[in-house]
Length: 329
Image (cartoon, rainbow, N blue to C red; front, side):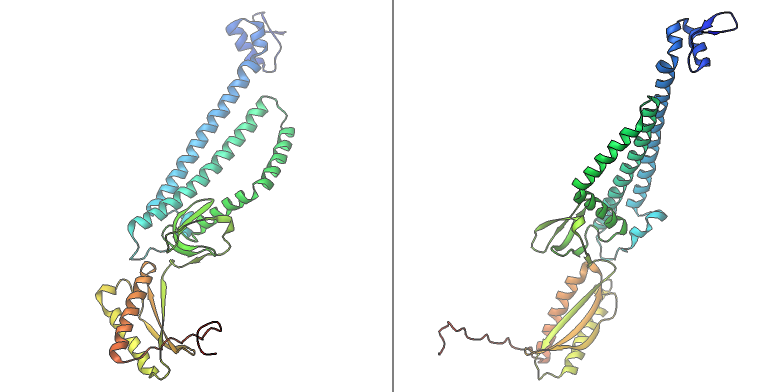
C-alpha cells in the first residue's frame, strides 16, 4: 500500500498517478489496483485503433485524389509514365476515357490495398504488444504460413505482379490492338490478373497477365500501313512505282484524309521477286485507329488505277495434278 498526503492509502500498481486518481474517484481498492488493466490498456488500444482508422482514411482519400486526377488526364508527376501513349486525333473520346479510368481504378485498388495492409498490420502489432502477447511465435508462424501460401499461390501472385507492371508501364490499354502470342485482338479490359481481348472473329480471349511474355502493341503512337502490290514480270516497274506514288499522294492531298495520314507516302519500289510476279511496296503512316481503313482504301484505289493504266497483275499458278486424280497417267 502507498500512503497519500491525507493519510489514506492506495493499492500498489504500475502507474501511481493513475491509481491515485482512480482511488480518489471511486474509493475502491480493487479498481485502483487494476487500473492499468481495466482503464489504461483499453484506452491505449482504443487510441491505436482510432489512429489506424484515421490514417487509413487519410491514405485512401489521398489515393482517391491521385487516381481521380489520373482519370481526368491531369496526371501527377509520379504517374507521368502512364502517358506514353499520346491520344491520336482519331481516337474516340469514350475509348480514351475508359482507358484512363480503368488504369486509374487498377492503380488505386493496388495502392489502397497496400495502404490498408501496412496501417492495419502496424495497428495489430501495437495492440498485441499492449495485451502483453509475445509476438515472436506469431511472427514465426506467420512466416511459415506465408511461405506455404507463396508456394501454393505463386501463379496467382505472378499474375498480380505482372498486371501491376503492365498497368504502371502502360504496355497496353483499352482499345489497343495487341499481339500477345496466342491471342491477337482489341483489348476490352485490363485487370490485375486477367487481360480480356476480342479478335477479328469476335472470340473473347482471357489471358493471364503472368503468361504474357511479349506484347506487340499495334496502336501506340502511330501505325505504318505497308502494301505490297503484285505485278507481272514484264511490267514497266518504274512506271508502276510512279503510279503507286501518284495514287498515294492524291489520297494524302485530300482534306478527308488530312487528319488520318500523318506523313507523306513512300513508294519504295521492288520488295521481292517470286515465280508469281514482282511485288512493289508502298508505305503510309497513319493514326493507329485508321490503319485498316487506310489500307483498304489504298488497295482499292491502286487496283482501279492499275486497271486504268493497263498494269497487269500476275495470274495465279495452276496447281499440280494429284497422283490420285483423273488426269493422264
